[in-house]
Structures are given as C-alpha cells and as structure tokens.
Length: 142
Image 1: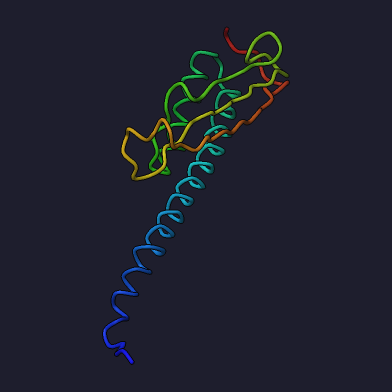
Image 2: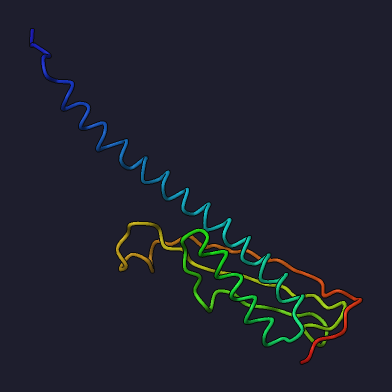
C-alpha cells in the first residue's frame, strides 16, 4: 500500500488550473458580452430618441452619435464610429410622422485576447430602435 500524504496539493493545482481558470474566463467574457449588449440597446434607444427630437438632421445625427458614445462609455467601451447608422422613413428624417431607426452592428472582441485574434474571435453585437418624429412639432431644417 502507498501513502497518500501530500497528494491533495497537486490535485488541487490540476483542478484549479484545468477547470477553475477557464471557467472564470468564460464567466468574465460572458459578463462583458452581456454588458456590451446592454450598452448597445441603451445606445440605439438614446440615439434615436435624441435624433427624433432635434431641429436639424445634421445636428441631430451629431448629437445622437454623442448620446451613443456616452451609453458605451458608461460600460467602459469604445463605440466604433462606423458601427452606428441611421435610416429614415418617408421623405425627410425630421418630417412630422416619419420614423428614425438607429442600427448598431459591432463585432466585439473577447477580453484579454491579443489583437491578432480579434479578427477571428469576436461576438457580433446588434441592436436597433425606431422612434417616430412627433406629428405635432414643426418640421426641422433639412
């Protein structure tokens, strides 16, 4: 019969390294992805709301992008400029009764991975929100 004295430490190291560390990374990555999804929903909601209440299409889009940047900054994320687009129904974006849709499409890199892996390993984040321009307001400058 062999003596088992001192075998618990190597077993714990194998379990900690082999199971607990990857599990902790998956949980942290999942939390980051859920935070990015929440930031995306908040960003498109605020961007479309701000845009629909402005008096000019140019300043409306500028302020809407700022609102989306703030929503992402609240989660300590950077929103890429090209990931947020606006689509308008009817003739003009700020005509009473028209609809403004903010669409965010972003490929979020997973945390703590080197930049060389970002093009291979990413999570697609997509969100959209549509607001109706109030029918009882004067139309904005185009």
